[in-house]
Amino acid sequence: MSKGTDLRPQGGEGLTDEQRAVAAEALARAAGRLASDDPGGLIYSLDLAALVGAMVYEVGLQSGVRGVGRGILRVALETVGDVPNGATRAEFAVPVAQAARAFGYDWSKTDNRHLAEAVAG
Image 1: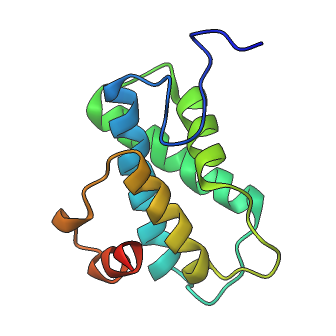
Image 2 (image 1 turned 90 degrees about the horizontal axis):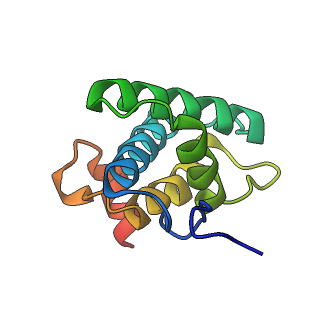
């Protein structure tokens, strides 16, 4: 039985607007890193968790949102979903970018135009 305070996937239901903004920005940054840093390399679940966790921490510090990073990370990773076996970093950047959009990230105002096109498509 879920409680009203439970964090859930699907774009961050149960998160505050401020927490959703952290998740959106963190996922967008993670997608950018996946697409640009060793894009042909394979991505694994632990790698993704470490990357998104680092981005949540970084964005949280910059925005002043502290103490809830673990919850934001959990919901963000649930929204992204499982990493399929054999997925490259560039391939998996697209679902990560789509998860950022689900949290409200505005891809029209980004430097990652190549990702913005993939998210829209």
